[in-house]
Image 1 (cartoon, rainbow, N blue to C red):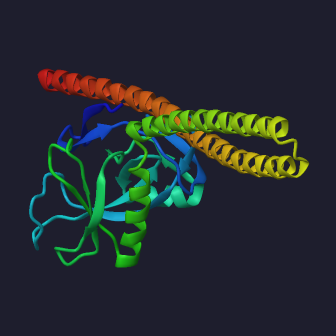
Image 2: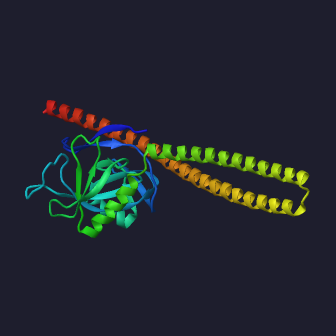
Length: 288
């Protein structure tokens, strides 16, 4: 299930600089552990273990840019891919990340990747990538890398992260149910077939009394039984594998839900601080 929410990045002076759509989802790929640090009022308030798939510098134009030319302003941002989200910061955050293996959990912006389309974008003479989604109200997001090889690495990671959606988790559950139904059907067919062979063997035994034919029929029965058992074991393995994948996906979704709640709390706190700052500023002007 998807949820969407408007998010606005605001400077210290109270100016809105950009907005984007936030969508909550889930995923897994190659990960490396870092320590996450939250900064509020200049003090460390919380350390969180996080899994980060990729990080580096990308250039970003302002949101809503429709055409790209000589006058387009490209700003370098330190970008972090975590689960199914792309977080971006000031370029200065890269130094803290590389030296302390920590990054601030208050990014300038958050891009939800679940369900997004990520593709190469070379129309403007730069090694760029483009992120699109039907819910993006201000247009597509274009990011520029330093070279095509680095851009391709970003595209590969972002595409993997975009695959973790609620629909995919539901599909996993449907596949497990289908495997269970197929397994039950095969077991019934196996039982019916064995019973049929056994009945034929008994009939031949009583009617013909020929030991040789009975032995041949018994051998055929064992061969068919072995084949059916192999098929049943195969479906059982596939069922267990799909079930494990579903559990992993559900675990990732739970982790993302917890992070969503944390981000919502942080956002509310920032909005309250902003209102307080504006009120203080208004009072200050009145006193002057």
